[in-house]
Amino acid sequence: MKPIQLISPVDGSVYAERMPLSPEAATAAVARARAAQGPWAARPLAERIALVKAGVARLTAMKETVALELAHQMGRPIRYGQGEMGGVNARTDYMSDIAAETLAHHMIEDSDKFRRYLAREALGVVFIIAPWNYPYLTTINTLAPALIAGNTVILKHASQTLLVGERLAQAFHEAGVPADVFQNVVLDHATTESLIAGRAFNFVNFTGSVAGGAAIERAAAGTFTPLGLELGGKDPGYVRADANLDAAVDTLMDGAMFNSGQCCCGIERIYVHESLFDAFVEKSVAWVNGMKLGSPLAPETTLGPMANKRFAKVVREQIAEAIAAGAKPLIDPKNFPADDGGAYLAPQILVNVDHSMRVMMEESFGPVVGIMKVKDDEEAIRLMNDSPYGLTASIWAQDYDTAAQIGARIETGTIFMNRADYLDPALCWTGCKDTGRGGSLSYLGFLSVTRPKSYHLKKV
Image (cartoon, rainbow, N blue to C red; front, side):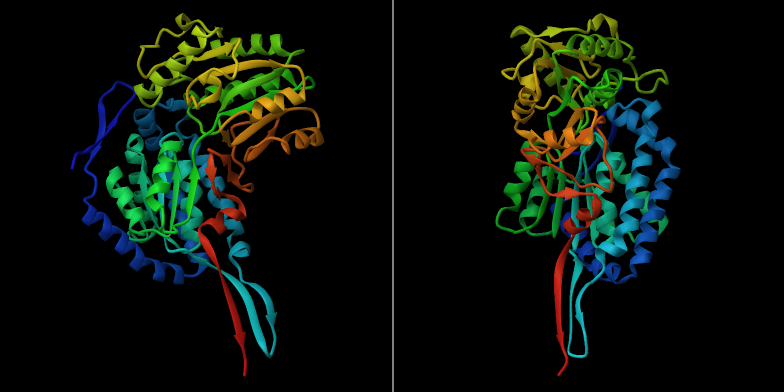
C-alpha cells in the first residue's frame, strides 16, 4: 500500500504522511467499535454527554495548535484559524441540551394492563467520512449526536486534513472517551468501499463531491445501510429592490470569498434587482479589492491559498471559459501579486454572465462569483432554481413574509433572509437535488443516528 500524503498549499511541501490501514486492520478496528458499542450505550445519557463535552473542551484548549495546523493543511489564514472552535462548542452544547428530550421514550399508555411506548435506539457503528474545508465543524455535526445517542464512531478524514482526525481523537481520548468508542482511521478508497459493501457500518455520513457520494451509494447498494450525503452546492443570493445594499454587499461578498470560497454553503452566484445592480457591483468590487492574498501564516492575510493547486486550476478554467464566452472580469489580478498560478489564486467577480457558463452552473468552490441583473422576483426564482444543487439560498428583503413566500418556491435545504453561509444548530442542515440527502443538527440530527423501537408490553 502507498502512503497517503498531505501536500501543504502554503509551499507545496509534504506536511504529513500516513500509511492507510490494511483491510485486515480496518476490519479489526470495526470489530472493536462494535464490541464497544453496547457498553457505551449502556452508560447513562448524562455521562455520555459529559464525556463528549469534555472532549470538545479539550479540543478547544488546543485551538492555537489547531489554527497553525489548519493554515499548513488547507491554507486558512491564521487570523481565522480558531474560528471553527466557536461553532464546535455551540453545536455540541445545543445537541447536548436537546438530547434528553429528543431521545426520551414517547409513552402511549402506562396502565395496569399495558405499557406501550416508542424509544430511540442507537444504530450501532457510525462511519464519518469528513471533508477538509471545515474539517472540525463538519465532523462534529455527526460525531457529537452519534456519541451522545450511544453509537460508536469511526472517523476517516480527508487526506488534505489528516491531522484533524488525530487531534479529535486525542482530545476525546484525553477527556475519557474510550479508544474503541471513537477511532480515527486512515483508509484508502478501496478499503473504504469494501467495508461499506461488507455492511461494516450501521450508518455512513459523507460530506464531499457528487462523484464521491455516488461512489458511496454504489458501495452501499443492496446493504440497506442508511446514508447521509452532503455533496456541495451552487448557492445563490438574491438582492431585491428593497434590500439594505451595504449589508448585502458585506455579507454576500464575505460568503463568496471567505475560506477562499471553499464553503459548501458559500455564495457562488448572485442575482440583483436592476435598480440596485450597478451600485451593488461597484461596492462589491471595492470590497473584494480590499482583501489581502498571501501566506496563511501571515497575520495580515485575509485570503489564503486554495487547499490544493488542482482545485485552483478548476476555478481558473471556469473563469477563462466564461471570459471567452463574453463574461467581464472586474478584479484586476495585478492587485493580488501573490497569485502564483498555483494554489494562490486572485479573487474574481464576473458580470455579463449567464447560465450557459460553467461558472454559473457547476460548483466552483473557489474565490469567484458571478453577478446577474434581474427585473423581478419571478426571474430571480427561475434562475435560482436553475441548478442541479439545493443547499442554501440567501434572500435580501425587508420583511419575513416576503422572504418566506419566495423561499417556499426555491428548491433548497435552507432559506436565509439577510444572512448567508451560516449554520444554526437548532435548524436542520439538509439539502435537495444533487446536494444529497439526510440531515444533521437540530432534533432531526438525532433521528439520523438512531432508529425507532416500539415496546408493546401487556400484563396477564
